[in-house]
Each structure stands twice: as structure tokens, then as C-alpha cells.
Image 1 (cartoon, one colour):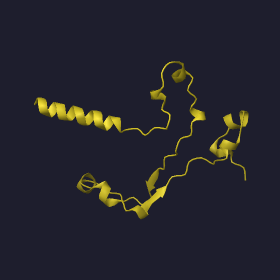
Image 2 (tube, helix red, strand yellow):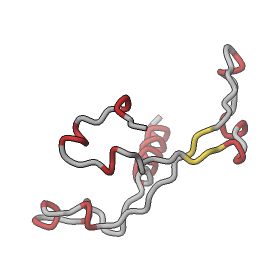
Image 3 (cartoon, one colour):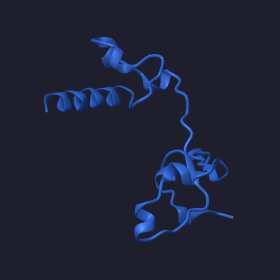
Image 4 (cartoon, helix red, strand yellow):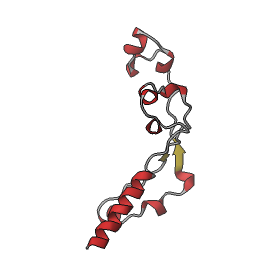
Length: 106
């Protein structure tokens, strides 16, 4: 029983160690005033690509429960999600604050 608990503990710690990818300069590596005065915008980060499945199959019941996601999604069906470049990002001040999707002109 102790061996099982030890193995699960080691696995849990190892998965937690690789859970997040960081920058070259990690805020967690800094201590003292350097940690307190860390500026996120001064350190470049690599953008993470997000993919979504373009044509999902609607399953129900046992077929949904027993599906294997890693085998069902071919790379051709994945579409990269684009974030940003919107009209709202170009606005500043009260126009940005009061912007709504219904207020599109044109």
C-alpha cells in the first residue's frame, strides 16, 4: 500500500512539474525586489497555438462514453483559433469602454 501511495505521489509531482511552460525569465526564479518589480510586458513570450475541431460528430449514449478522442481527430479537421485583431483593440478611452458587438458600423 505504501508503494502505491509513493508511486502516485511521484507521478503527481512529476506531472505538476511539466504542467506549465515558461519564458526564459520566469517570475518564480526571481526573489526579493526583482520578483516584486517584475514587468510582464518587458519579457517576450511565445504565443501558444490553440486548435479547434472543425466538424465534430454528435454522439450520444455508449458511443459518446466509449469514444477515444486521440484516435478520432485527424489533423486535417483541426483549425487554428485566431484571437485578436478585432475592431475593439484599436479603440481607446470611452469608445473602448462602451464598445459592444451590437455597435458595429458598416
